[in-house]
Length: 115
Length: 108
Image 1 (cartoon, one colour):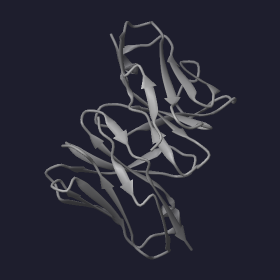
Image 2 (cartoon, chains in turn red, cyan):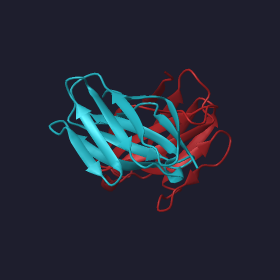
Image 3 (cartoon, helix red, strand yellow):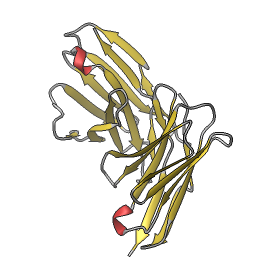
Image 4 (tube, each protein chain N blue to C red):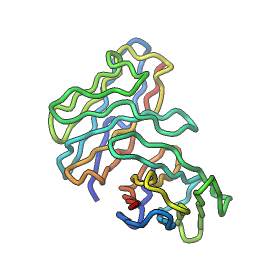
């Protein structure tokens, strides 16, 4: 099956710094990428949907100025958590979807810890 | 982390029929979750079954878990057109990793 990678797999940062997470589709062109956040023992929460070359569509309650999403190419999307705070500590997962719209592949996730 | 893999990848049934989807995984788990995703929308958590449970019900959903076979099944009874969606399983080794999903189409 298709592979989606995320980098880094984990990151620890100080409060107030910005963190960039990359999501790459390794063997297919991802026309759409999704970003999710998951808090411990909770289900995934969709944060935003990004289509290549377009601005991301954010879900209600997600601050677009805090969570910057860029989908500049068909194989790469980035999520930047700006001015991170301890409450942003979470598990961030991306998924990618290609031309077969019913198939979606998930990345392994990035564990963010903000001190 | 490990990946759950769903089977079949696509399933079409008539409204009122039952739909069964399967999920296999590779190593030991703490729990297994099933999620639904409507087209273009985010994932919705359906049900969690722990490794010491064999069956769990929630409304029209029934989930079974066979840890000896490393497999789980999701049964949707009396399906409705609104059940049309993709269904994912995910296993937990601390973090959740999802398989490609089963695309269910319920025809009216």
